[in-house]
Length: 111
Image 1 (cartoon, rainbow, N blue to C red):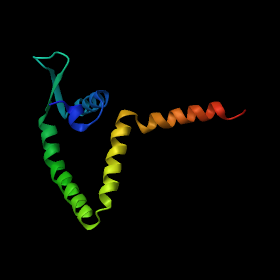
Image 2: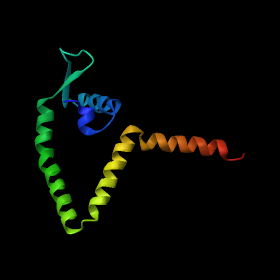
Image 3: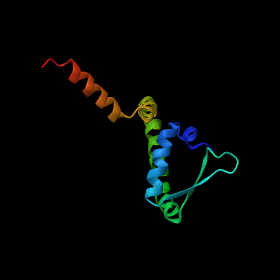
C-alpha cells in the first residue's frame, strides 16, 4: 500500500510524518526488497498501543459526523469542503502560504 495515495497527501508529507513517528518510537522502517526506493513502515509495540487507544475515539468521531449528516444533509457539504482544504494544505502548507503573503506584502508596502 502506498501511504501517500491512501491518505491523499504528498510523498514529502508522508516522509515528514514517518520521520516524526520514528522519532517518537511509534514506527520502524526498513527498505523494501522489491523496490529499494520504497520503505516498509511497521508499528512498534508503543505505536500499536497508541493505535488501540486512538481507534475507538476515531470511530466515535466518524459516527458522530455521520449522525450530523443524517440530522442536517447540508453539513455534508461542509465536511467535503473541510476535506478539500485538508488535501490542498497538505500539498502547500498554510504556514508557507502565509509566509509568501507576508513576503509579497512586505515588497508592496511603501517605506
